[in-house]
Amino acid sequence: NHLLNLSKRTVLLTNRLPIQTSIRTVLNNREWRPNEEAPVTPEDRAATARKYNMLPEDYKPFPPEYNAGDMPDVAPSGRYFERSPWEDYDYPLDRQNWNEPRHPSDFIKFEKTRLGHAEENQPVITKELWKLLIFPVSIILAIYALRELEFMNPTFRSPKVEPGVVHYSFEKEDGSGHGVRY
Image 1 (cartoon, rainbow, N blue to C red):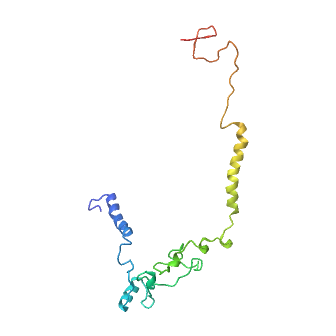
Image 2: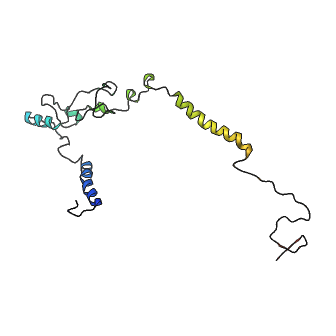
């Protein structure tokens, strides 16, 4: 870069472009898209199996009524909680390995077993709930108890008003005790 006399900003922009291109064109790559028709000949089936990283004898397309093209019909690998939590997955949050063929039902994340509404999946959080309850209640009670001290809105007593005495005035003083207007 120093030989070409490029600035750091230019180098960053040139390096960022391939990343953006690979993200934007992921659905436009013809090799990654499923074909609209299932393969018929054994050579086409073998090529399609290689495309999906499967063995040719394991590849079986979806039935034509599903309109899935040449996508492979794989057996469900198991729900999230059915898979072993001790296995070293590439994507531990999904319990999935890289390039693993997945059934469409494997992508259902928001189901009863995944959300974990059962009692055994719910942690006991009474300590946190008590903290959430006690903190605001204690602040409200402290404000209510300290309101007599008048920290927030202080009021001051005004001086006694005595007849014939001027405590403060914007008028000019002439010595008689009464103010003189300009």
